[in-house]
Image 1 (cartoon, rainbow, N blue to C red):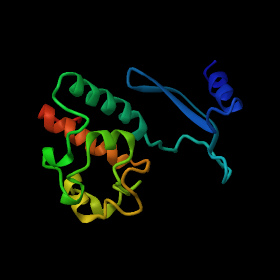
Image 2 (cartoon, rainbow, N blue to C red):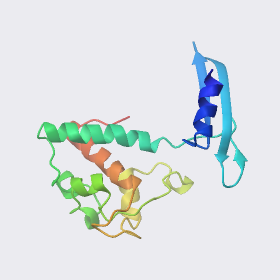
Image 3 (cartoon, one colour):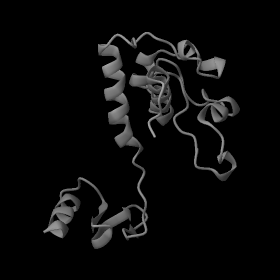
Length: 162
């Protein structure tokens, strides 16, 4: 049954491939890997593939931002500088711009690099050109926008997402 559901999604081109791993009482019961990990390069899906779940965290971050706005703890016009977020080059960016991906912040940065191990998000932001390749008021999809929104929520709540 599960294999049929995954295969149907592949056949209907919702995704190129998928993995489902079912555990019960701490033990793996079943793993299904179907389709392609990379369809263009013809790399088949297998159990060893890992997935980036960053986009799922955006849902929770956006929900928390809207909660804070509804409770008047945050405004769409609040700026990063209001939360002591560094570097200064991004201190005038508004919450609204982060949500709309019009902040002028670079689209991507490899935080997973070994040379970044042990460094805080703020330390890395101070070391990189956060505005490289992006233009303010123009849509540039960036994970960094929502990472900064997360930081704002942590400042408001005085607790971390972890």
